[in-house]
Length: 182
Ligand SMILES: C[S@@+](CC[C@H](N)C(=O)[O-])C[C@H]1O[C@@H](n2cnc3c(N)ncnc32)[C@H](O)[C@@H]1O
Image (cartoon, rainbow, N blue to C red; front, top):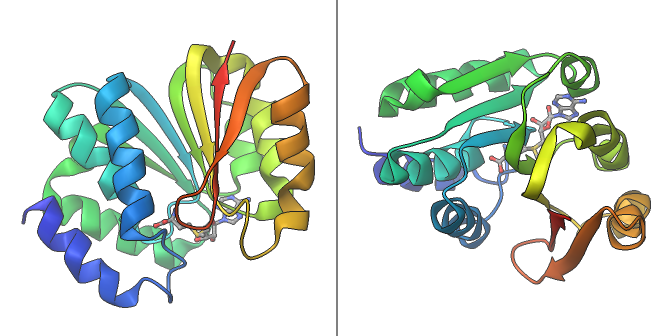
């Protein structure tokens, strides 16, 4: 099945699986496509909706691979099905478990990271993976404006003031912080 068809189908259950909006998905797709990102990491796959937007860019760029992490076994199983349905599983490594444990053991570098798991843990994920982010690597974090901006405040503050990243809010979906490693 075509990715666009599956994306359309999944939009019917968007709220149930806490998926990003189609507009936010298109935003991620455009970034990966333009930057020709090669090593992509996603934290918080749910049923794979946002992963499919990333995968669509990888497919069209004809290069790249994705690691995506989900701790809920049922949602991970649905993500797996959706990847198989569209044939993108060949370049997606779906890791099931707590991102904090998994990130600790990743040793490859990344040039694109999308963070969309537990809001209060964003900074913890980032710190665990920061050394693996390439120069000019992009980190996008969702839900900066909605629904719990206070939970991501420490993350936003770090991204804007640590001196490690250049960072700003994009008013797309629930608010996405887009940061580039200097
Ligand atoms: C907002 S949903 C992700 C939605 C997905 N990015 C999309 O737009 O299609 C957040 C997901 O993160 C997962 N999650 C939360 N904390 C996690 C953790 N510590 N490790 C791995 N997954 C986690 C939840 O189980 C949930 O499925």
